[in-house]
Image (cartoon, rainbow, N blue to C red; front, side, top):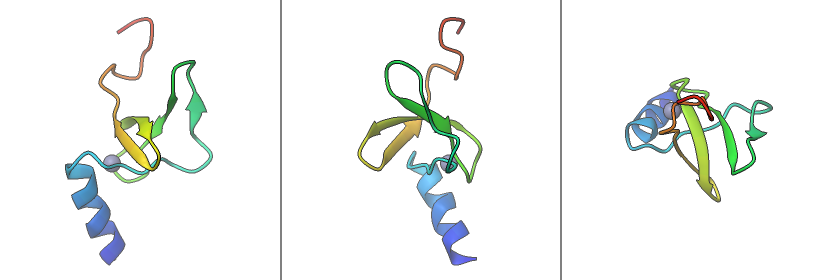
Length: 61
Ligand SMILES: [Zn+2]
């Protein structure tokens, strides 16, 4: 699938796509998991999702 290849490239450049229906608000911003690479991601702006550098464990990490 060409879209899978494109998304793999996007993931490489830290442009992930959240799994639909699995995005939630953690009190600071929206967080979720990339539907392609399963990485924890955090919304940084409109249509911009970055890797969650806090490790997805707020309060513990
Ligand atoms: Zn990804």
